[in-house]
Image (cartoon, rainbow, N blue to C red; front, side, top):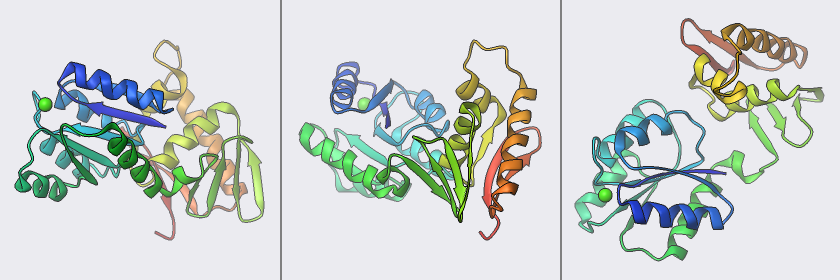
Length: 226
Ligand code: CA
C-alpha cells in the first residue's frame, strides 16, 4: 500500500511519513503542489494526503487537475483552516475526506483505512479484478471465466499497472521506468514485445478486456462491454 504525502511543513510531513510507515504503509513525501500532482498522476499511489496551502500549486488546484485527468485516487485533504467554505471547496474539487489540523493521529489512520476499504481491489490484497479478469498476486496468474494462464514477472508487473489504472492511459515511458527501472537499458521495443505477449494471453483467455494502443503515448486497458 503506497501513500503519497503532499505537505510543505517539513516536520509535519516527516511525522506523517513515520506514522504511515509505522502502520505498514509505504509513504513518499513531496513539499509542493506541482511535485505532488506530477507524482499523483503516475497512478502508483493508493491514497493521497494533500495539504491545502502549498507552494507552486495549492491543494485545491492539485485535486481539480488530478480529477480532470481521470484519477480516482482517494484523497484526504489536510488544512490548518477550519472554515466551512474550505471544507465545501475541498469536497467540491473531489476530496474524499477532510481533516483540520491539528488532528489526532488515530483519526488520520482511521480515515486512511476507511479510504482504502472503499477501493474494492484493495480489499483483497492478493488479487485485482477488472472486466471479468482476475490477476492473482501470489500465483502470478491471470484468469477469466474458467481459464487461467501464468504470467512472467514482467508481464505481471505490466498487467498490474494497467489494471490499477483501468480506463486511463499508461505512458510507455512510465511502464519502462516502473517495470524495468531507471537504470535499465530497456527500450520502447521491450514494452511492445511484452504487450504483445499479454495480448496473446488475453485472446487465449477469451477476455472481454483489451489493451488499446494510444499512438505516441502508451496503452490503456479497456473492457469491451464498457
Ligand atoms: Ca501548508
